[in-house]
Length: 392
Image (cartoon, rainbow, N blue to C red; front, side, top):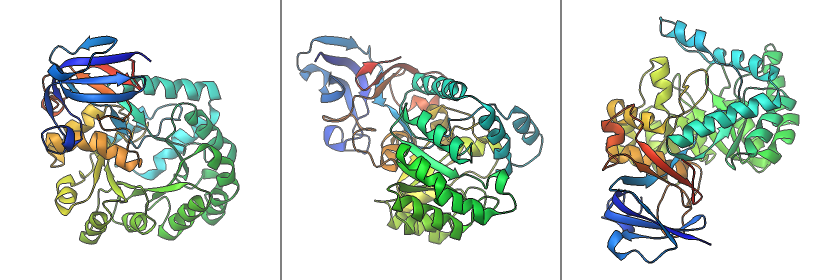
């Protein structure tokens, strides 16, 4: 294989304290990274870099691990511009808006759904995202959920079965019947394409007992639980996620002290994934990242990219929001968008730049990662390597 050195890096974020300055970011100044195939084989001071077949001059730019977007909804058709416009004029968001996207998605061809997915993936990659999770949830029939997962699985290994996004309009008068479908025939059809099972545990979607039944059935089929928890109101989602050792409790906007304590106690198992794009797009209360971090919880940041409540694929934008409105430092926000996302996906090969890790990284047209929050809205990502291949 051809070896490549990315050298003359002004500031390198490794997320490995043993490789750098002892901080969680493991910073190395005037650094280099050596890639062999799809794997990082060496990081350290540029002056000590081993000889390689080729070299890339970073010209003093900062380098960071590729972003790990651990929560998105990218298999859909249409958009909800009218809903967003109305909401910005005073109407609050509710879970029912999902039905609009369900109708559009069911009507779309496989080719149209895949083309839309790929368009968003390219958009995210240009902004430094090298790993993404995505969900079903806009089909809500056996056939449509299975095809969504099949399409997603062709582009990522992090695929989530979310038949329990809302109760299907077809079962509006029989939610118990829909839970039976989600835990039965639909699960059987979808499990072969998925790694994860998720549920929207929220008023207007699924209550605690329904969510437990869905997640338990998914786990019995070999899928790992994650939970849409406590987004719109206080509820049982976070406690259920911890109880079932879910990989993540996502949103975590409305938390009691008991919820925060539970997430802190489960920091090695269940990650609190915060999705500030949703709060930005719905003018809702911001999650309190500072409260979670001070308690000792593990926190991830993700885009929640979806056409209704968070139509952004930009992890840098979410970092800026987290720093400005959620009490995170620039260091904490970057760690949560990289290593934190990897924890939420139970991965140790991504979100980190250290020997043996996957060669996923981004160069910033800036001398420091702090510019991600310092210069919000500016397209700072100048180059991206994914699995050792320069893609942007």
